[in-house]
Image (cartoon, rainbow, N blue to C red; front, side, top):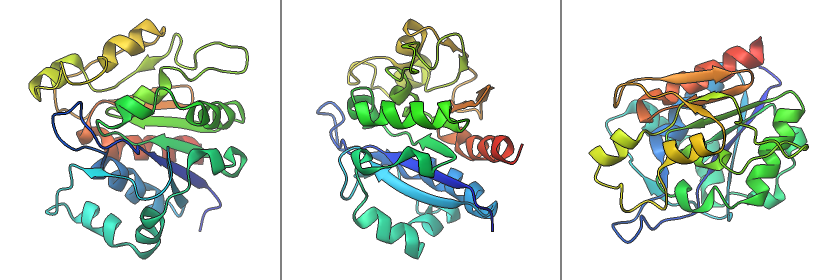
Length: 224
């Protein structure tokens, strides 16, 4: 059993711009979780507001997603996640910002999320995000005020993918554009292809298909 501890952060927002209900994308939590538990890590969940986070995108045919939701420890945590305000970042070696469209509303404005990510990164830990999860990076600043993503290569849900799902007008901003505005070098790949960027201790994945690879890269860095 490893002594490494990873925090998965989930959205608490359930309204996709009036189009439908949303939340965290189950596969984007489950697939990194599988990589971490296979590596012997301890995995904890937290959400922006605490309580039971809203779910989206559950694929019951995916064995990993079913295992995640049926895992006794995960079920207990999902029933009542702590809010990020109650999290001590010094307890974690890495934080993963799980995607889902809900993140586009509550991740960017969360001062607690920005602080947790900053503290873990500045303590030598890993900050990771997948799909829409990088929305939590757009306002994350280091202690000196520099955006954490400034000058770094990042992946995230692309404008082409947002258009493909018909939600360009529903989301509050286009993630790829906002990452670029904050000084990141957004690197897109083909829609729905596995694509991960690793820059120092920042790991970002483009879409749901990249979730496992994000987990593997976090493990690689932590086992360094």
